Image (cartoon, rainbow, N blue to C red):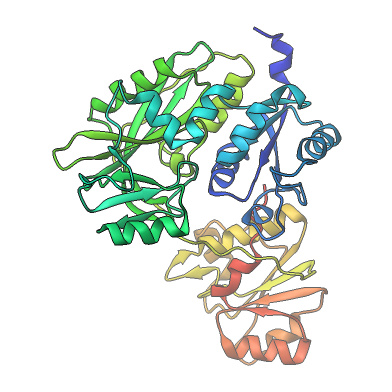
Length: 435
């Protein structure tokens, strides 16, 4: 084991590419840990990573670029990166192949494992005598049982996959991509089994989850399946055949008779590993600790949980303000409850040193109301005006913004003071998610 003092120092972790679903899950898993400082890098300017990574780096060459390793090493040196965490299948293999050239350690499995897992063809050839893999057809086979499933040998998600119901449809698909594999169609339930193998090669965890709804190859509705013992047996077989280190996963699907058939194996974080993270198993962080030759323990909360994912709005707003003026009723307090999104924004302002001014037409004792909802310490100033007074007369500081549920109040402030005004439904554009 390495010197204990090394573990006490905060480690700099680079995630690349940070805007993939994998990179976003790694960010959620690591960004609040006191053991790491997380950096995100991308090759493209339009990606979601820039909205959540506080330490964000752009214009890294694509993984196929001849200068990729040299430029990545420059980034590693400049930011004193200790570990790089690959967040795309092609990057997983490239970094594993280039470990000896890199100026830091790659978090992941050995290169031969990455090479086999990157190819469905190699994966099926490796495991055909060990467990069930999809039946593979040749283009001119006469015993093809339609429908069949066509997918690339090297790919991820459901990109460039097809279901063909005739030889004519097969021919059409192969004209688009003649390297597609022709596989039996599996009609049953589909599962992902999230796994963790430690530095000693011991499979420490294998947890299944059903993929209830899939969008663009991504599991967007999933829940744990704790009771199916077949998952652990399959995981043991795979773990004994290939050498893994850290988090990995595999996917299976049922034949019509219920037999589980291997679809793919990936030696990386899965975007939906957030399900088990919320049960207490933080696989990206466990992988970081294991990469430092630390022994880890795993336990999880065995409660009913289901995770559903959908698009989320995040914004870049070029707006400078040092003062926030805000209403109380139907804004900070909504339906006799504290508006949690408003509170999140107000505490964001406190963190940034932005002054918060409450302007209200409260009919009761405003101090008692603030105490009732435990809001008495948030505001820098509290002004309670009567029904005839205008709020604009009390907006004296700048640069400032105004937040109120009332259209007439916002319109009056906008016209008289010329400052940006916001309804509570547009607060989301003011939230800063970068950590």
